[in-house]
Amino acid sequence: MRGIVLLVTFGLLVGCSARTAPQRFADQLAVETGDLVSRPLESVEADFATRILGKLALPIEILEDGSGTSVVIDIGTPRSVECFFFADELDLAAALIDYSKLAFEEFSSQLGAIEKTQVSEVEAGAIDGAPMFSVEWIYTVGGGNGHLKHRVASVADRSVYCRHLETGYRKTFARLFEEIVRNLRYPSTPRRKPFYESVVRVLFSKRPVGVERTAFYEHDEGDVRLERSSHLLLPVDGQTLMASDIVDVQFSTREGMLINAVHVQSENGGLTANLALDPSDNGWKVYGMLQEKEFASEFTGSRIHSMLGDGKAVRQLVQKGEAGASIELGSWLPEVSPAAVTTGVVKMKGKRDDGHYNVDVSVGPLLVRTIVDDQGETVAGQTKFGQLEFEMVQIFQRGRF
Image (tube, rainbow, N blue to C red; front, side):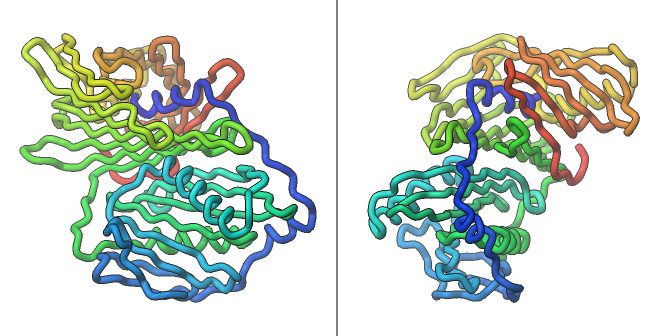
């Protein structure tokens, strides 16, 4: 049910329209390089190995603050591609806003004041299960136009970010980034292997603006560690992006009942919630920070479904195959109510011709129409806020719960 609530975050946001570029500039945007050779790239000191297209333009450099590694890649264009391999995981959506601002500050110091900036494209997706965002900008300086491209992804609890401050070469840059992410490994760090993982793309007015990854891991004494990271990057107008990054970690019994949980949320890079949920004598206690203030509360309720429990319950519902049958799920959804159990109603509407099932999910006034497979996994969903339409589509899945 957590994935459904991701759509709520968009309720008050609006999209943007791209600026039409002159034909000559449009031709420049369409320029690409020829075929590039794939080469191995490895840094023992930085503990990563991958492959790149093109060749190194400068030696690999460890960042002074120890946060990661800088790699400059020559792809045969006037400006090389700059990539940064970080030692930790970034807030993907907020990172692209921050690095876009940094690029414009650098350009302003070199070329003079930027007269206008325009978001030309936002993309959200996954590369072999790694959640990925990209944003492209068109800017005006000195009466002429320019083009900036940024991409960021998270692989095995670390992030990689690349930028190309050169007009055109969009497909070339995308191919290079995919080559890096698809082959990225950390030789000295054991990679945690989930027994189930899924990535969902969120669309607003048919545009990809969000990505959410869910992963379930075996834990001590038969319990399960559940992780979900949700990232939204939405153009509000032609010059402004809004970012939301959410991380949820739950520990659950194998049967799907919640043991404890942590919820961390940031908006435009600023921390807005850092909450923990633990059992108490009378039910549950939640504590931490909410909207820059200390927060502590208790509420009753002996049993709360975890993410795993939600999925198991939906699977039982659809496998019974009874149209009109429904179940209630009690979950901790801090975006909806941090100090209460939120009850959702899941109703089976019927089986589809493709073998999936139409299932409606109601959380308060919100109704999400979903398509669910016979294992209880949501493969697509749709909801509306007035005239605004939001969709989610599963784009990657591996394993079963």
